[in-house]
Image (cartoon, rainbow, N blue to C red; front, side):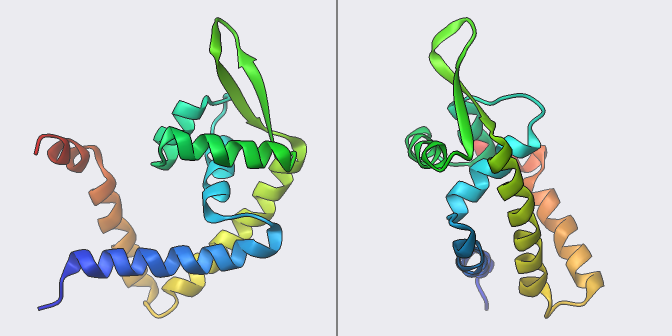
Amino acid sequence: MTNLGFLLMNSTKRLKGELNRALQPAGLTISQWAVLAALARSPEPLTAVAVATATGMDKVTVSGVVQRLVAKALVAETPKPGDRRARELRLTPAGQQRYVACAATADETLAAFLAPLPAADQATLTGLMQQLEGETHDNNLSTR
């Protein structure tokens, strides 16, 4: 019998590798892309803790990724009003442009990854994954 957990992990590893290769010409890693995407999708600036929560990365990893993105002038850091320790993160105009360009790359990479599946199966897979990512699933895992 095939182990579903192994299949999910292996597929994720393959997709991450393909996405890393696709993002390389833009000078980004998948972790950097995830941070850019989290910032681009937020209507407000985010702290590193909020980015860590949104991306599933730990705060130390996010901090290093943010510093590399700041060095590339893709992310700006400013002090958070009312909290001397926290910094607000937002995309710079160059970061917004890079996000838009790489969003197309990410979409193309995902489309190529899923191409072996008919459109109906892709829709079913998306629905099933959304169920797994839903609040009920998260709550069930946290009570174990």
